[in-house]
Image (cartoon, rainbow, N blue to C red; front, side, top):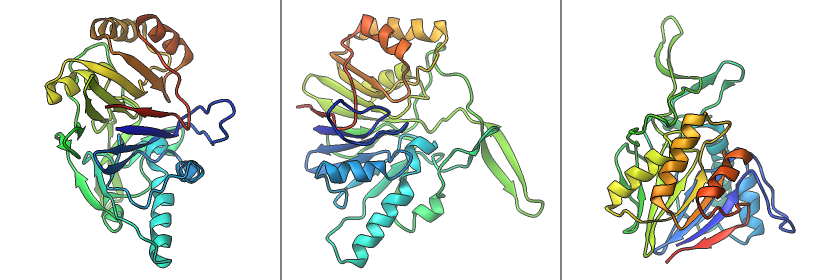
Length: 286
């Protein structure tokens, strides 16, 4: 499998790509192309074009969760697909894989809507939707985990804003519930040296995700964990629990990025082989 970072918060020196607080990866595995998340804007498209990567032949578009920094690029991608049709360019329409809750409206008091700008109904006009909360194998070695069991009490237990569960059309009222992002998920690749766990933000908890990946794949070894760890000013309990878990796990590499702050990276580096991540990074796993 080859993984290319199309969007991250950071870029590398002397690599003239664009960055934004978001995430998007291109995976090439077993003859299939998978786009994981679309970032906040059209940056993933601009970077892919500069890298010489076409996104017109994707087999799957997988989404980690519904937040703006992972889904707001969808509108730009739909434009690209539509314009390709107009110009009669060769293309595929990828299957869009996500949790059933991924496109619920999400509200944060200070900002308003922070979820997907497009509903599942609108997206179904452009993609074949696969909305699943159970593991779904995209290839023989790559799995979309679905909903993650939350077994560790030190991991993400705080809600982020609210999600709209119901609407009463006659009175135009909405029923809001605290949003614990139960749709948050990850991809896992079965490499020869162990699992490669590919996360978006890890709202479900990076340790919860990793433990579920090991269960689903029936593999205890972890080669790499790449993506957001959602360690932003973490509590002492969460940071300590995460470090103790990783110390026992002993992954070969850790590519923590996106929503992982400097303090957390420094702490992670004490317990594992932490590697830098930036737009343009390419990793290969056998």
